[in-house]
Length: 168
Image (cartoon, rainbow, N blue to C red; front, side, top):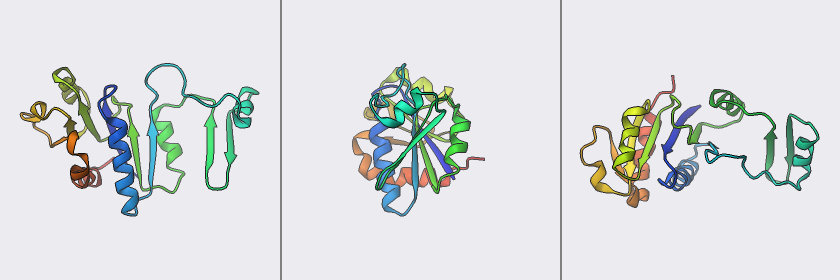
């Protein structure tokens, strides 16, 4: 399974880029899994009134529900990223796109909003490319760059960076 992270601070365009990459890869026959880090504190919304949530509240460690076309699982335990990746390895996917977990050592595309965010490029391991809505920020970088204002035209190039990276 290939792995690539999309990293950056809040409101840098991570979710927009993730959605575009997921759509592109899916349309080209790649089976994509996604994982998002809920980095804003607190817990993600798990729907307090669902039966599967009530099962968790009653003490289940993992709770699942099977619908007509969707299976959903909730795990009542915090896992680190490597444990989550192991879990995703059990699913039939070719590519795992991870939004967040910026300090982890998987290949990543970093998104920057302003000059202060540029420090991420030197702080984070394994940067494949850097994107920004501010083209002037990208002019003097020593890594591949792309303009977030033109994501659709940049997606094929970003896909090649992702396909070419090694997770070993």
